[in-house]
Amino acid sequence: MDREAILAEIRSAFEGFTRDGGMSWSEAILANVYGPDDDGVESRWQDDGKDWEAVASDPEWPAEPKKGGFSFLDATGYRYYLPAAMTVALNDGPCEYLGYSLQPSKEEGVRN
Image (cartoon, rainbow, N blue to C red; front, side, top):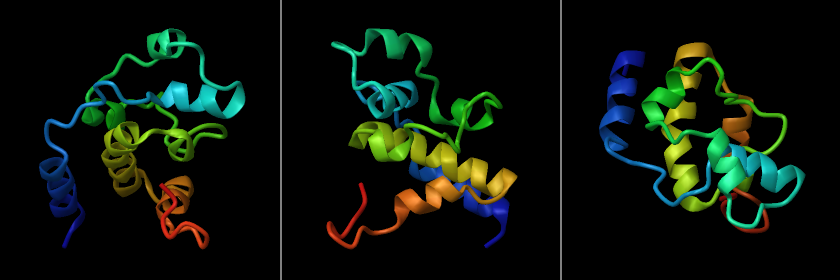
């Protein structure tokens, strides 16, 4: 299967999926560094909740963060950012952090 076919499969599988109520990327960074704020208002303000395809095409989105990222997202946030990260990896090359977050944990069976 070529890259374009894989990208089409990703778009189809995650079509219409939103982050509604889920943790944002910036909230994951806060959870890693400071702990969550009371209601997430400050960190949600920094992340405008674009659809995941817009996130994937945003050159400012840190798909390989130094803090936060997939390990700190809730399940909804994880599913929202996963197709964006897979798209970035297919377009720009491997994302080490994405690969790590998808590896099973020895203790838990799955990482997220």
